[in-house]
Image 1 (cartoon, rainbow, N blue to C red):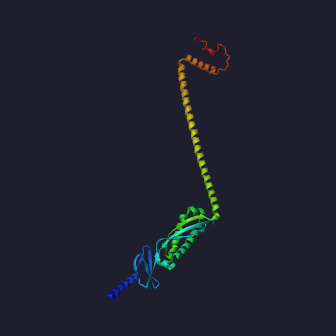
Image 2 (cartoon, rainbow, N blue to C red):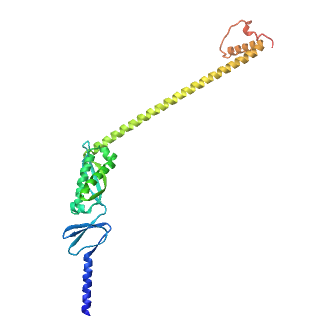
Image 3 (tube, rainbow, N blue to C red):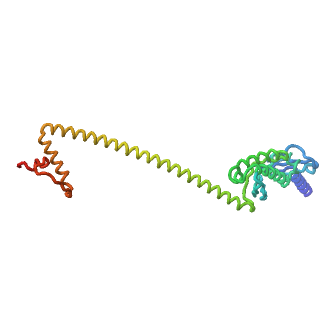
Length: 287
């Protein structure tokens, strides 16, 4: 009885060892390669439960999630031979596991070394085509897109896919920092002067148009006033003529009164006239 129990335990242990040695699990973010006596066999193993032949097959697993490679800050020359210090990073992942293993022995450090060389070369080429202003502010997105596409094409050769390339920091080298800031200040001053000149020109044009409109308005008003005044004088003359035509004596009296008022209004004038002058005609008449 005891021998049977012992034998059953041994058999169970052997079965458990066999299962443990035969079955293995590939996680969701992993892919695996199966080797037979050190040689790569079959296709990459997808996530899930898989099997192997103990003592014949060995398994190597790889993380296929997106990885980040940070580069050290490095100097790059622009088209004007001015140095910029650029710090970048690359997002990458395994694209072709077989090619990745054959090309870089499945080592992430070797893959990143090759990526860094490609980024450096492509970035140096793109920066060298542009001015400082274009790299710092204008064309950063274009540069990143060009570099990403270029190294993604090259990285296919060692089984890697480049997801993204970013410039973390673009700064001026110490040797040119002061001169760049001085140039920027000069450019801003020129821009301010141009805007001030444009604003003054616009203001002068508006002022000239306003003055011209004012003169035209005043001239039109004076013209209308003169026309109205002339019409009023003509109407007054017509009324006077009608009135005086009906009473000549009243008209002569009215003219004499106007003459008296005009003559004696100043108070400082002296006139020497004969008493029987026609001027005093209405003074001599009885009330």
